[in-house]
Image 1 (cartoon, helix red, strand yellow):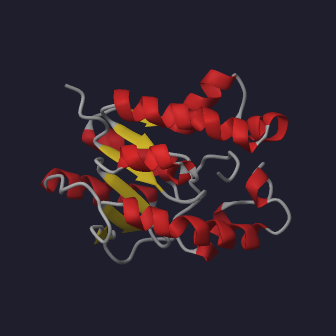
Image 2 (image 1 turned 180 degrees about the vertical axis):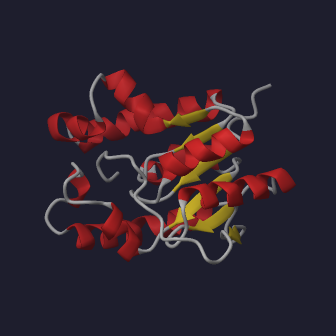
Length: 202
């Protein structure tokens, strides 16, 4: 029987979900899947174009279906768009999963979410918009997470290695309020780069 993803990565835009997720999947010898890529495959256009041409509600509807399908079908590492966790259905489905929250501070997010990238939710004042996104989403991230990993001053490879080590020890019980475990790579790491996604803030 399919028990779902080995790990589900959540976090704000710029946290590194796709980059870390691909590295983690490689370390664990499993497949990597990104719900944003699934949405783009169904829509036949980029996430940025969906936002601009069809609007955020259209994107969220596609995202909702993509998240449900991936959680049902995928058995490797799964990365969710930053705002996917706000959907009540997604929250219910994630309640029984091993969820990894890539914790990233406002300064690091502002640096990683460059102004040369199309990010519809960061129009106007990106820093202020990111601050608002974090305020709205942080309680949800923290409530759903099984493992929290800090990313601000660590390379993606170190973050992936940290998560792989936790998973290798054994998957703990599903996340619940206050149930999150905190982990972070060892000291001395160089400051991490952007998550390499290039899509809009979600």
